[in-house]
Image (tube, rainbow, N blue to C red; front, side, top):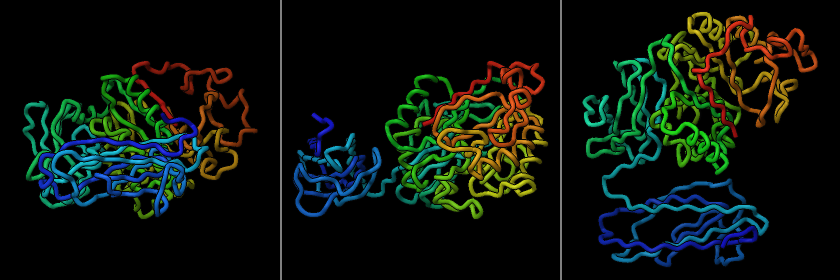
Length: 463
């Protein structure tokens, strides 16, 4: 039994191996909070966040860990023929620690075998193209077989240069079409085909049809709270397809490292949707702690592939820091509010103005991390990023017909008037001049005549 006073929990499992010699090593994957020691057949093989020397049930972990921290390692093959015993002890940081977590996976690696340990996930789609990405634990070829029928994957992408980071752009696709796929190397299927392993190209630009986007603000806590939000959306959407995921930044706490992205996005988190739904993002400040937008280096820019040449719609930005894309009759503009120049007349401003003036789409959606209006866990009256996005970008975007703006950063639920033309601090707000409709009750259109369509469904879930 585990309760609030538990200092150490012990787990044991037995399994049988008929021929251990087929494995050249062991792969270990541990989820823990706060420390752990792993034993195989009575011999310690791994110690994580624990002091050296002998331990007992009163020994505490060396330090607190994040909820559901995850770590992997490899170990030499010491499996026995027949019955093997795997044991793990999980230690709390203190008797007052409020939670404990544990999960463990041991797998044998076969000589010459390759495992996919990230993805597949989908990037920068258009009506005629899409990018598929995945990561392998060892360098190998990049091969995708795909087709419009699960039983007939008659098209092939192949790059025989061995690599661990695989980026495959598939071109000459039909618009608004579902393609099933599988991932291979020259030896075997690495990710076999399945009914939920597919990608769907964008409809032709301007197409009027129902659209479902999943919008995630500051999700990257990598714990069960994040999974609870995920599960709520999964339960809501059921078997219906999601057309895209918009990450509003701070996707992986606390510093946006590659390991933190693995836990907060790719491992036991969004992998069931990422393999069949295109993901888009803007940079948050936590993502930016390990990333440089000017040089487009760091984990965030290594992980994502965004359109720089206008290949997903409208004006080429020349950078992954900010970009745009079309989906049906909606034009999306992603801006970077943390490290990029936010001044009027700066490169991002000039691009955004040219891009929004070039689109003829019925709806325009802009998103960036730092909200122009908030009195939640952040204050848009005092923080320069928020003030500059409100004062510099909102007038231009609103004058060019933006319909919806999405932001994260403030970890709270806030209600607002429907605002129009308010770019100052909160004390300058006047409900008689800065709202759409009487006391902000309008429908969001400046003339108040057009009712928003019920067919465009927006789901906003945030941790």
